[in-house]
Every structure is written in structure tokens, then in C-alpha cells.
Image (cartoon, rainbow, N blue to C red):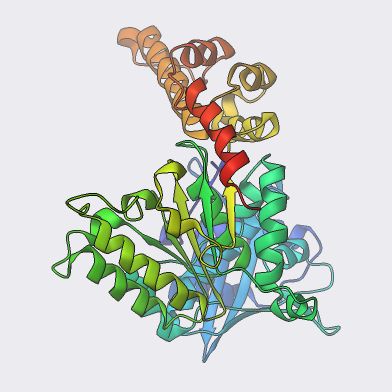
Length: 430
């Protein structure tokens, strides 16, 4: 959870834009475009701001020109620099420019421009000696319509970095998936066939969906999530709608397709009478080989109950890897807590204690406890205010978090955790 949020530029943000412009000038850097051009583009073209509370702490202004978008101005408040604001602003600008049919985004910056680091992290390439930065937009204009029909989207590029801890899982995914998929020619030179389909398994709430989205973000590929429960409502039936969805996906050059709780449509077949999902399982088993035939795509299936999957579903040739995703380690819990504790409490709360007390908690459990602690602190502040209505600013204390953690029921029981360890031994394939 970021300390800021991104929204579109509004007329009332003009004073904040001027303040950021003046801060930019104070650094000794002369902007490429004149102030009048920046204001005109902010009002007529595309502009987004980063807001912390009610304060605008960053702005980026873009202008479409033919098949290319130009960054006209980007600035971050001096108190918010080097915290990822610029990267988030650039990602938000791209999301708004992509539907206009643009193929790339470019920016001209002086040599002393402070956002060079953010541009490189956001995927821009430094062209020649002119400090000319450019990056390709990963989704073509004609693919935008298909993505909208599928409910797909291009995720911001910072999702991978935002996963704190879980380094073992990240290393496996980086080496096995991202490396060969992002560099197929390099992989081919070593005789490596890039993976086309994987299964993520683990107890509920351990972050399998988060990892799937992070993989798409890391690859810079569109992300399409298939919801079996929604497909079932179609007149075509679940099997027919599943087939139609994958037919539409074929039109995308690159894509990560994600099916969560895949056990709903790939459970054990057999029995008399046949199970209602048997036809759907058969259809999915036909779809996967066809999906695997084309490069530039990855199917990620996630399950909480890997033992419930049909045996034919997991065999070699359909899925390249079967990767366990377990409970967050101490480093991951620390990162999760750091993102959930509000700024007002960051200095006073004993983060190390919260990490120790939440061993065995899933990310969802930690988020529940954090919200409960914040609610407890809010109610206490309102009660103390009484009839005066003057609520003292503040946030939850370590004691609030202790109390919330104490009443949180963990998602993953000891038995489930034990079964997960056994499944790693018998079913994992990394």
C-alpha cells in the first residue's frame, strides 16, 4: 500500500503544478518545454498527479503526437523524491496514452535531470548522447479492444518490486520464467524452451494471485484473468465460454492468462454419473496444448487444493513447472507490515514485534489484523473526542496491533501447513 495515490490532473491542481515547476527550477535544471506549453498540455492533453492526503506531491504531463507520446514535464516534491513516485506517475501516464494507439513514449531531458534513474527503472532506453529516452508501449492499439472485452489490463511495472521478502520464490520465478520468456533468443541459444504454462499451489491467501500479476508486470505483458464462476453464467456453457475466451486470447501478441482456483474446472474425472465439470476438464485439457503452440504467452493456474486436480492435468507436456507458494517469511512479513502501518504510526510501532507475532499468518491475515488495529484506534480517538468533536490526529499503537493480532484467526491451520509441505515433496516441479 503506497503512501500516495494516483489520479487524473484537475483544474484545481494548477497551483500545485506551478509549485512543482518552481521546485524544479530551484534544482538548477532548465525544463525542455516552456511553462506555457506544460500548462497547455496539462489542460488539453494527458496529465496525472500523485496525491498524499490532500497534497499533490508529483505530476507528469504527456502529449500524444501521431503514433508517439511525449513526456512534457515530470516533477516530484522534494520531500517525496526517491520513493517511487516518479515511477508510478510514468506507469499511470502510459496506461492513459496506450488506448490512443501510441506505439512508444519518449522524453527529452537535460543531462542533469533528476528523474533519469526513474526513467531507466520504468523501462525507458537512453538513446545516443542526447539524453533521449524512449520505451515501446507493450500493447498495440488493436489489442486494447480485445483486452477490454476479456477484462484484461496492462499492470504497472512496479508490482514485482513491491513483493517484499519471498526471495526464494522470486528467484525461482525470475530464473525459470522471466529470464527465458523475456529473452527468448538467448534461451534458444542455450537450448532452453521458454515455459508456456505453470501451476502455482499453496494454502489460501498466500499470494498466488499477487505473484501471477507480478510475473505479468515483470514481463510487461497484458494480464487476463479467467473467472470460472463468471463463465458458467454464459449461454454457451462453461466449456463453450472457456473455448471462446482462449480463441480471443489468440489475437494478442503477448499475454499472461491466469485461472485462479483451477480445481473448480480441472477436478478429478470419473465416477457414475460423470461429474458436472468433466466436460469442462476435457475442454481445458484440449485447450492447453493449442495454447502452448504459440510463443509470447504464459498460462498460470493457481490452486489451493492441488490434490483435487485431475492427474492428467498436471502431467509433463501440459505444465512446465508446478511451483509452491507458501506463507510469507519474516522479511516478507516485515515488508507487508511496513506498507500497512500508516505514516503517523511508523516511528512508534514496534515493527519487529509485529513480524514475530504474525509467524504463520498469510498476507490476507496480516492485512485483516492491520485494518482491525486501525479501526480500534479510530474508535478510541472518536470516543475521546466526545461532544467536542475535536479528534486528535494519530494512528494505531503497538498495543492496538497486539490486540488485533491476538483475535485474528489464521487462514492456514497446522494441518493445512503440514499437508502443503507433503505436497511439495510429492507434486512440486521446479
